Image (cartoon, rainbow, N blue to C red; front, side, top):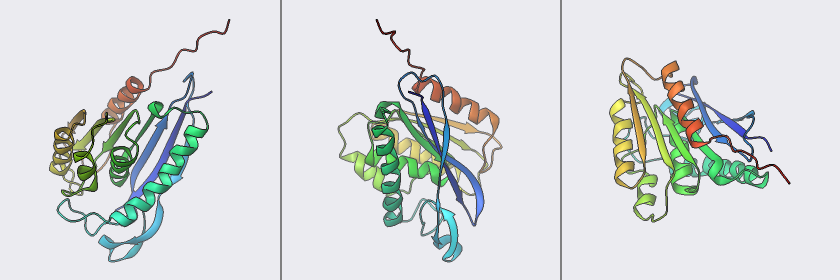
Length: 217
């Protein structure tokens, strides 16, 4: 069976393309990977005064100091849970699946991994954050299970999602038992760069090494 990589396109911030969120799946053998897409949806977006935007979920405002719009987050979580269930039915082991993303996609992945699927191989969040009273933190306070490892990156000059918001998210998750890595990138705004993606690639290959099939006798 081939290993599989899924990408979930993420747009936000008034319709601007903010990047991509990914669920990377690895199956037995792991010799090759394929990339398939799953898009965010058009919905009324409160930071745009209710205008339609292609975003993963709604926010009351772009800030870490306000409640989460949990109804829209949970609605999309269900869609993505169905996607993971589909991969498992196709023979992909849960411990060979990573989820992650950029901006809102990373936030979505944190909810998915730490609230719904704690038996995944890992989660990554690039230029992302959780609100101070996030349901993720509340769920982890009651958790006694092993948790996916978190890989996180953030630009120090990000003016849309502040670097301090990402740092705080990482610090709180670490205090709640998550094994975390946090990389800061000087002079990087709300965007990705090659060095960041190379670090992410190395982490993915470390978490999902190629499995060697045992020859049949």
